[in-house]
Length: 165
Image (cartoon, rainbow, N blue to C red; front, side, top):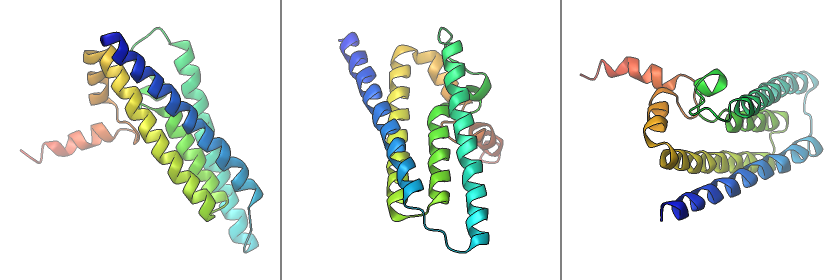
């Protein structure tokens, strides 16, 4: 029974990972091919902001994949980008998507960006459920120390918990 549950969790996470990557791959050509600039100054400013976001997202995603590959036998990976957010690859995809929306704020791009937000959230939750199943104690401690998407959110929210008592 345990193996069947784990296999189902793994298959679901793998399917969601593929969907997540596919959504991003659809958004890239739409952002580039349907671009319509307005004023030259606004156009250049938005392109700079877009390229900055795309570059930051790409660096984050690639750094996360390298770290994951190098430390595949360690659990949890809680150093580097994985010590800042639990899902840096998907966070990188989200930042790339934001950059593509800035590059071309079309309705199509907004819809695809929203789809990427949804699929990355579902993928992250599926992977977390799988990790909690495989490493219940270690992963719950990791979740307590590292936020899912916003860097250091767990530590910041902990500062304000002293005001509640």
